[in-house]
Length: 500
Ligand code: MCA
Ligand code: AMP
View 1 (spheres, helix red, strand yellow):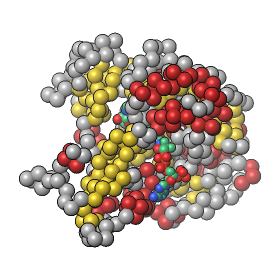
View 2 (view 1 turned 120 degrees about the vertical axis):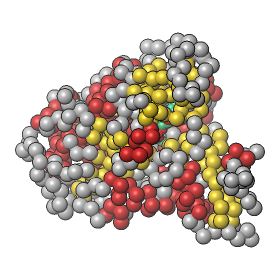
View 3 (view 1 turned 30 degrees about the vertical axis):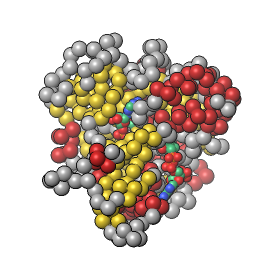
View 4 (view 1 turned 135 degrees about the horizontal axis):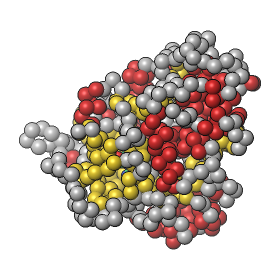
């Protein structure tokens, strides 16, 4: 199989990665990641404390070079989520930036600092437990000297929420990465000349696979802003960056800022491609950006388990409210409630999107039951509901599960939050729903029956409790207090009645 990163093997002198004032060319990355990879060789599976920093990018590339599956961990994970991921993925080592204090769930593992491969820190940052066996090339050998693992070999394990229970680890093989990135290159005319800018987190598919591994596979470069702000976007797009990736919340904030920021409008107008994904970009924001910049945002549709399925093509007709057409190699069908495929593209028949292709994950780690349930006749059920325009463009109109919330582009399961809320001593009953929010798409709302109505837990207390156990983005943004939750005759909570 061809290498994941040809430009590393070729020791290209072109820029590859930039985070603030830290930057590496492809050749420098080949050295840094190659050296780290030699120390990872032979590990069974590694976790990486995925801060939005250069070290995370180097660490992930090193693991991929070494053929060691890597689990990106949200550095804002709360205790319970972290304990689950550590237990479920059972890494043999953790990669982290030097100086980072790891929480107890990971601190007991052997650790390797992500700059351990660079000259300045060679020989430091590990307790010596990092494996050195396996087929590691000699020190000084080029990145291309690492044997390419087979296409089915697991590359990344990315945790993703379901409606109930703790997050599941989606095992992504190497062929899923290469096929999705190459299909996007085809759809977006993405080349080594492109300079991407983004500010996405590096523990999910969007920011890590598309936003870091994508430019590296093309031999181009990426500038990561560390954290999102419109000033950083304007600065980079007016000084050489050609592409922007973001979630709808980021484009919404851009749309809000455009009216008073001609520099931002000018910067966006000069970009080659503006791409939005992870949730639907409202047509209103599409329109505001187009009106102020003359540029159309291109939407693509994907999922942790499937990587990318569809996109509006760079050379295609942009159409607000659609996610474009299936990518090269991806088979997509809509299936109605009876399980029959909808053959006609009539712009009105709604069905569940099911997909097949080399872009798919292989399994949920340790969850054969969930893996089996996710497929029907070899097709992956996405749970997303859509219609197809007569020319094949896909329009997502909703999703099957009401207990999945997309907030800020993050997928969040209501059940996981309810369980944590119920553990708070001040909570007798809890239900979690998503409510439309102009900024986040959906906002998490907690409906609480307090244990002591005269002294209910405060909104802040409950938000901190969820952030501490799960993750900051899973915290309720609004808390509503009730005397009782609406239930049907079976005792099941009627969530639809809550918003009534
Ligand atoms: C606030 N914070 C707290 C608390 N409250 N921390 C602990 N306890 C609390 N009670 C902190 C946060 O950690 C954060 O810190 C800051 O306060 C603000 O947090 P938050 O309110 O969450 O930020 P936001 O303004 O809501 O963020 C908007 C965002 C973010 C930047 C757009 O939602 C985001 O990065 N979204 C990207 C999601 C994504 O990449 N999804 C891809 C998965 P600080 O300020 O220091 O950060 S989907 C995917 O991969 C598929 C394949 C696809 O299709 O793409
Ligand atoms: P995740 O599991 O976090 O990877 O999120 C995947 C889900 O995000 C999909 O199943 C869709 O519901 C949603 N999604 C991703 N991209 C888009 C898009 N462009 N438009 C609408 N929904 C999207």
